[in-house]
Each structure stands twice: as C-alpha cells, then as structure tokens.
Image 1 (cartoon, rainbow, N blue to C red):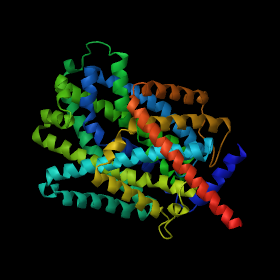
Image 2: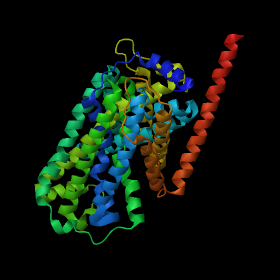
Image 3: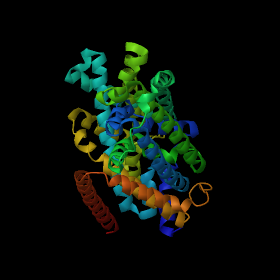
Image 4: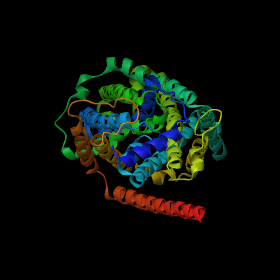
Length: 449
C-alpha cells in the first residue's frame, strides 16, 4: 500500500472513529433495497415496454448483469476502504483528493436533484389524496414536514435512521409483493410472446433508461464508516439486495406485460395501478397509487440517512470547511451535514430547479461508477486494507475491466447534451476545489507567519 494512501486512510479513520458502527447486514441490505426500489418502478415498465414490447424483460436482465459487475467492484472496494463517503472515499484513496472530490460532486448533485424531485412528486401524490394540501403554501408545509421529521430521526443516531429505513422498506414493498403474488395468476401468456429479437439500439436505449431503476447502492454505501465489519457486511448486503431487487423488477414487468399486453405502453403515468385494476379492481388501483407515494417517501428516508454523509466526508477531508464534519456530542451523528443537506434539498424542492439537475443523472452516475470501478482495480493492485481481511475470489482483477466496458457501452447511448452539462459541472467543481485549496494554503501561511 502506498504511504500516501495509508496516511489518507489513517487521518480519515481518526475522524470516523467518533461515529457508531451500528449498521449490520439486515439494515444495510434494507438501505440498498430502499435506495434502489424507488417511485420509478411504478411507472418505468410502460416506458421500457414502449421501446421493446414483450422483449422488455431482456433489458432488466442486461441491467442485472451490468449491476453484478458494478456491485462486485463496490464490494471489493468497500471491503478495503471502510470510510464514510462510500464511492467517493474509494476513489479518493485510489486517486487522491481532487479526483475523489469530482466523484463526490457527481454523486452529490445527482442525489440532491433526485431527492428534490421525489419529494416534489410525493407532495403531488399527497395533494391528490387530500385536495386541501394542494395549495402552494400547504405543499411547502408538507415538504418541510417530510424533511424536518427525517432530519430529527437521523440526528438522533444512525441506528434510528437505519431502523426507519428498514420499516419503510418493508412497508413500500408490500404493495409490490401483492401486485406480483396475485397478478402472476392473471398473466396471459400470448402477451409475453416475442415478435423478434430487439435491435442493439432499442435495447441500449432501454438499458440506459432502466439502469437507473437499479442504481442506488452508491447511496446506501455512503455511511460505510458506520457499518459493522464492512469487509463482510458490504459484499453480503450488496449481493443480497441485488438479487431481491432483480427478482422483484422482473416479476413486476412480467405481471404488467402479461396482464395489459400492448396496452401497457398506453399508461405512462401509472402502469402498475392500471394493471392491478385488471385483477384487483379499483381497490388494487388505489393500493398501487398509495404504494407509489410510500415508495417515494422510502427513497427520501434512505437518502437522508446516506447522502448527508457526503458533506461530512467533504468537511472531514478539507474539501469543505471542517465545520461540516461536526459530530453531535450526544448522539454522535453528523448533525451539521444532515441539516445542510436537507436544507439544500428543501430549497430545490420548492424552487423547482431540481429539474435542471435531473439531466445530469444519466451521465453523472455512470461516470461516478466508472471512476469507482477504476479505483477498485488500483486498490487491489496496491493491496489497500483498512479493516479486516478484504473480499477476495479467483479472477477478481478482471471484473473492473468488464465493468468499465459495460459502462462505456451504456454511455454510448447517452446524448451529447448530457455529456456537455456534466462537463460544465465538473469544470465548476474543479474551480471550486482550486479556490478552496488556495484559501487553505493562504491560511496555513498566515498561521506560520
């Protein structure tokens, strides 16, 4: 292991030591599942079916294969770098603070835009059920209540936050499990018959859309500094969550496709609710609509548990003022980071500017994954270790290369505009980093003089 990496890890571990390692396999698995299965799966089956028809499940299989490669890289890296920050920490240890900061910014911007968008959708859903809450003022109050309650829960400690995620995950999965378990008996086999193999372009376009129904592990791995025995917990939780997610997604698509057939693409706003109405009537439709709201809240719950740790990690490593790495003296939680993140997300939710950030997600998340997969290879080459025996298996060094190839193929279906916007954001982040470094250097010189 390089001396620089050793010093970086040791310095960060001294700060992380203040936190409580209270997240085990069940809680981390639930957090990954909650971060992955969001409100999108309630609407995305119609979009995928519009592009691929009955062959839509093939896109789910392709995404699952790609995610196996990505998850393996994250599991390897996570077993070697058990620091708060997740993918950001892996990249930083492998390539240094600057590249790590860029990876963190890619994550932070997409996460912030996503949670702001989901909270906005949640407020709309609540307003449909309770019209009194549809006014602009009441919408703001609903958003404030969501953020405020989750901030209080998470400041009181990681165990409380993880516990809330576990409860919400189980709750939001119940409507989907009901949909699958009942709907599988109403599948009409001819609706699933392929008319032919899809073209490479149509499959690629579907995959780049669908891959983001699978991502989410990067959110759940951020509080790695609070995971029990990460060398074993991270790989087990990551694979278990991927298996659970893939099975649920495939069954959802098969039931929706099998019950609605070609009509599935005609319901882009609520395909699962329309499918449920076929075999459960209006009650089923209502349950699935409510499930979408619960799922949105579950995503926000998981995000508020995980994403603020990125701000904590920035403060810990000097990319932001040290104040942001403050730990609550009683609850030992990153309180300043949690409040800061929730405040920014709340501001975006009520302003609507989250829509501009949303266009970054396609390219930004995959670029972040690309950096992490490359970091995984470097961490193995340097034999970086920080907590216990790392995750090992024969031939594992080829996995990062395969993962990078998969990312390049998926990115080839992205638009030029998405690359351009992401490039502008990275350029602004680089300027921010340079200014911060110069200020820090100037302060050091003043202190010496």
